[in-house]
Amino acid sequence: MNRLGGPLLELTEATPAFDESSLPPVPFTLRVMAGECVVIECRDMSRATMFADLCSGMVHLNHGTARFMGMNWTELDDRHRNALRGRIGRITRRPIWTDLFGTHVSIMIKQLHHTTVSIEDLTTETLHLSEQFGLPGIPTETPRRLSDADIVRSACVRAFLGQPQMMLIEDPLETSPVDLSQPFFECLTAARDRGAAVVWFVRDSSVWQPYRKAVSALWRLADDGLLTVRRR
Image (tube, rainbow, N blue to C red; front, side, top):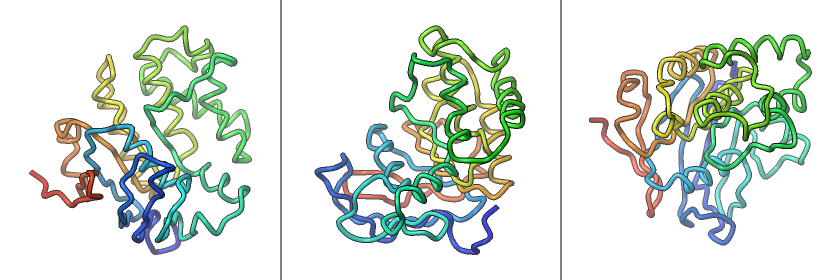
């Protein structure tokens, strides 16, 4: 739970270096408070990935600041940056899976690396989330042996595991071979009830409509920056 009283995520005229990202070199300003869900419409999901990187302190800025939990990413050393990123849950369309290990390792490794939670407690939570998203248990086979549907389910489990304080979600529903809207909305609401801030990137505006009453704000990520959109 955020106890700072201010925004969990705060971008203040954050202007990315164009040669290091696909984002336009324009200032971005955004504030997301604890418990809020902000939807950002974006036709180019690779651009959404880079914007999520910016929110995670992974994009060099020419001007302005990006803060998470009140801390300026650029003022932190690697150890503290990595610790803060351990509090962020992400669903990304960037390739994240490796066939060197079972899928369960890729799901749990961030929590094992960044937290002191016991393996027993982490396994229990992983099993609960796996079953909630329709997996028969914790997936231990390598990712290439899983179906496309089970890869999406595993990505959701990985993102919500560990009760993150911020969620950066590149929408998994539009491209999922199975309907995961119910467990996804349930986990999204539970995270917000715990005080997490949510930034949900969507390509198709119809995806977020069933959740529209719970959406705090709607933006569009375009060539000229982040634009406010009136909700329909």
